[in-house]
Length: 123
Image 1 (cartoon, one colour):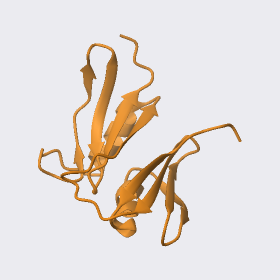
Image 2: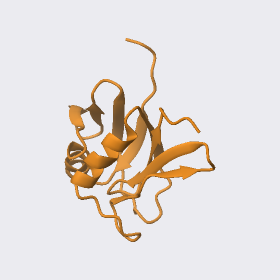
Image 3: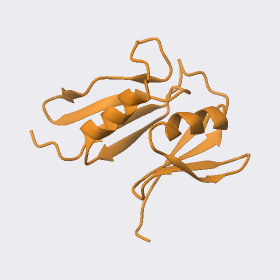
Image 4: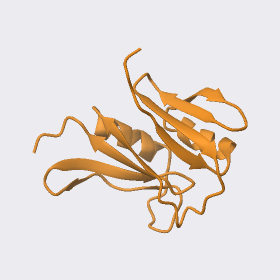
């Protein structure tokens, strides 16, 4: 296996977190009372630890660098993730920031910020 690094994020409720990410195509790779690993294919993996967290004050984040940003955004929209600014979870529209990065934002149910970045974007 090649070297890699994975995001570690808090989850106040493993069942809720797993159900949310399952709608986005992630499947359980491992789970016990103290750790959960969810993966989408072989390249995207997110690990969760139990922690009570207030989504309005969460400072946790991760980046998903995607070859098909539009396709993953469509999956998120099909999962009917809210877009209202006061909702958790929440989905943004795709945008280009600073003319150099094309991305959208996804907040999970615990308020962790997932930056979904278009790896194919060439400004």
